[in-house]
Image 1 (spheres, rainbow, N blue to C red):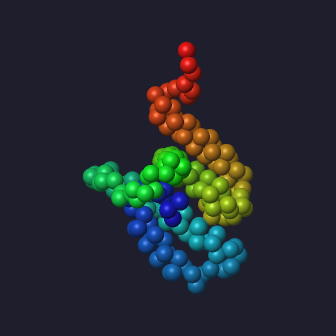
Image 2: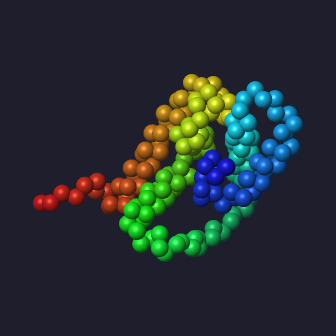
Image 3: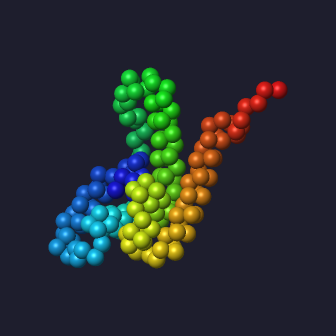
Length: 164
């Protein structure tokens, strides 16, 4: 659920709880036509979409204050340059993934990060394989644009520094 919803999702615990409840309730109806993991991913995907639709309707009436307190980080991990660079790259990826639309993020995460086949992803998101392939292509383009724009803004729009 963390990968489908994005690591920065404030409601991740609620989503996990809702998905686990749905899996538990619907497990007797699991027919075994697909792998259990594929079935669980499809439940998580539907729970995520339903919850996001509910949140959009709810947020039209109410607003929430966001808690911007930073997470406690391990100071020893911050000292290693390689660990710092890896952490920054991971944070940039998670930030870009959270800004993608749900349908593109789900397909990119399931295929590229979870390493599921196009056929399995199609079963999870309940669409045909050609739609999954086009969403995967468009999602990768969207992710690339987001990462490039983040990198450009980090360097003030300069991609390379060349001596004069």
